[in-house]
Amino acid sequence: MAIKRSSDNPEPPKQTRKKTSIKQSNYEVTLLSPQANTQESEQNEDKIRPQKLADYIGQKKLKGILQMAIAAAKEREDPLDHLLLYGPPGLGKTTMSLILAAEMGVDCKITSAPALERPRDITGLLVSLKPGDIIFIDEIHRLNRMTEELLYPAMEDFRLDVTIGKGQTAKTRSIPLPPFTLVGATTKAGALSSPLRDRFGIIQRLRFYELDELTLIVKRTAEILNAAITETGAIEIARRSRGTPRIANRLLRRVRDYVQVERVETITEELAATAMNLFDVDAQGLDWTDRLVLNTIIEQFHGGPVGLEAIAAATGEDRKTIEEVYEPYLLQNGYLSRTHRGRTVTAKTYRHLGYAPQEPEAKQTELW
Ligand code: ADE
Image (cartoon, rainbow, N blue to C red; front, top):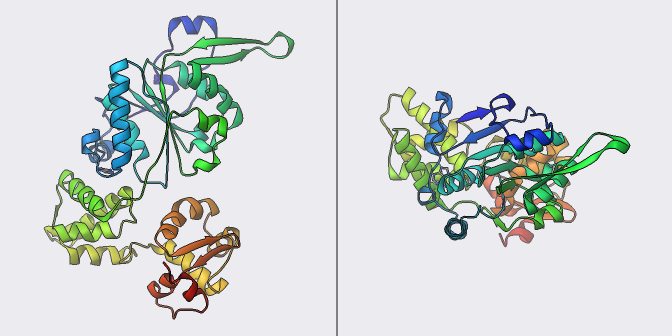
């Protein structure tokens, strides 16, 4: 994977350079062509990522929709429609974008909204595109207004409207862009402005993975890493992965370290469980921070309801991290419920953390 900075970005087309003098900026972009793979430290990561849609496990509905979009775009010789992927982190938004590029035979430039601070960051990126290329913008809900407004004509008409000069002498120029595809990724689809959201032709949510899908992912990664694992060993890691491939692969690496140090050849269910307990990942996959959040709500706020700000202050965790990284899984799996008055733990949480169930919360949440 080659990290591309301003200095080694492809030159913009000559005609474009004559008309304007857009300075190349220092945005951080990963330029990936299907063949690109240079840095050794990142080779393992690249090896683990599925490269083709056929190798991508799970997200069946999304795969079906994209398969159709790819076939249709190829037939028409058009770029893919702009695509918005939303859902919790670690579910494969970047991977899917790289797969789309590989399937379409184009390059994928990866960046994130916080890296597109100045107008020249996005203009520099856009003028460096080749026809059909994909731009992947992570955390797209965090784009600033100026960048977002530059994207509107770029997405809609493949046109860049730039202002040259200042004050009364300022002029607006339109620069034609090659047709391209924007893939936006966000954990918060609701935080996107409607004009931006409306410019995506395909909007899809990534879901947490099922146990059998995660088990397949663990086995696939283990094979790539040359780590021997039993079926039940893979299931044990999958069970503790919070429905998230990134966590499954991370846990597998840690368990692999453990068995290596213990001089054991194969990852079994028992060894996997021992290793993950050691890393503070419990039988349901809750980690130290999950338990801190839940214990805090029980011990300091009588089980809730309590606001996010108060939880963040009491745990010392970042509010956004709690909301975007920890909460989705806890909510979806019935450890937490969200009401207009704040967050409340459930009877399942009391049981799981070894507390006696509380009335009336236990009764109210027994439905989980
Ligand atoms: N590695 C990470 N996510 C994956 C997925 N969805 N399919 C296969 N391998 C993966």
